[in-house]
Image (cartoon, rainbow, N blue to C red; front, side, top):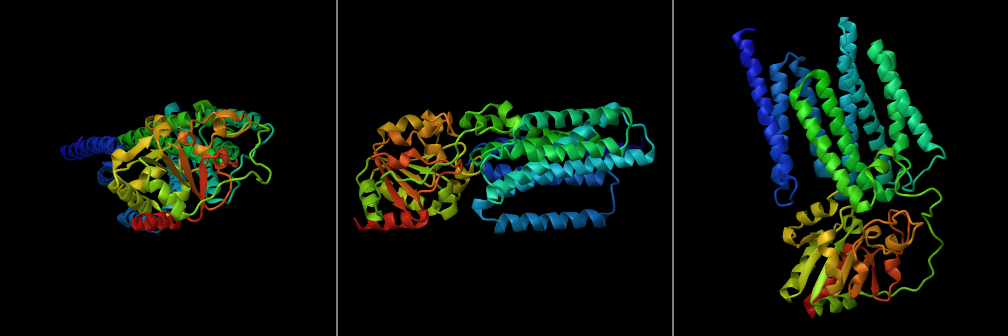
Length: 467
């Protein structure tokens, strides 16, 4: 090996080590809202260094293709970041997961074609990693777009249960294993295409039976799948930084999935197999509601809050839809000026993706120390004068504790019903994303404030200022 070539190899290796360090530090900083932005920037810088090191250290293709691809990708990313509404961010994450899996599968396919055309002998471990990449990547692709469809309302959020879905899934799994063995014995495109087709079908069949309330878990899991597919492709190409980056995404995604499943009271095995979130024959709907409720106006809510000693805000998807986070922070500031204790109860799966509420409230500069997770805050509700629920539904539903037929049965919820009084802000009496009515609506201590959350909070702020 020439000195110049050795220098190139060493330079690329050093760049990869630097990249790996940046990825790890960036990922660590993503663990806190206070440092998440800098962590995101570090991770972006790491990816830039990794791409440049790979391009400059290898004779890949003409610069025209590389620059063109970078420009197109940058344009799509910039447009998405600026134009996609915060309420649609879970859908965007699902699409990105799908494209990540698709990219890994396409790269693995291209490498297989190159090896076959070159007439090179394909080692067994290369065949296996190629199949792992295409299988996991293809499952991620179709599964992510089914998740997108459910989140966007294109596909029903209710679980679509096939009578023998588990049998079909197991049969498809054996089909992929058989195709992998076939490729190892006789490397060709046929077993590769069969495995890819089966994996695409499996991605659909795994996510379709999952209820809408469990979508945060699905997004976390599919994010992990995209990382695993990337790591497998790294082994196919012998690219160290791709292996590291994919492993970090895969491992962190699995950890996040574990946190989500614990918050939903699901097992990881149920998530992997699909069809969790509802039992066969379980009810996900109900008859037209006729029970009485208590409704109030903004001035009544303002009076309750102004004379309270402690208030807990419980944000949910309705907050995101109304973009009311800034108004909620303004209301909280007014209450704190009156000496009232203010905190925010954040359920791990509130919203449509992990961390959805944290992102919204951080955007409104809500102090991080006021954001309390489920375990921290649940014991405080019984000592709280008023709990203000803003668009949260399933995560506050007491029936999760008692109704065995409910799709959210067993899910740890925020103990809002233990507060002295509850103000529930909603547009109407519609059920939550899980399709079940919230029993909290009908408690004597609950007052319903109907209307757009942003308008309702603005009304309360105006009334408190006049007190």
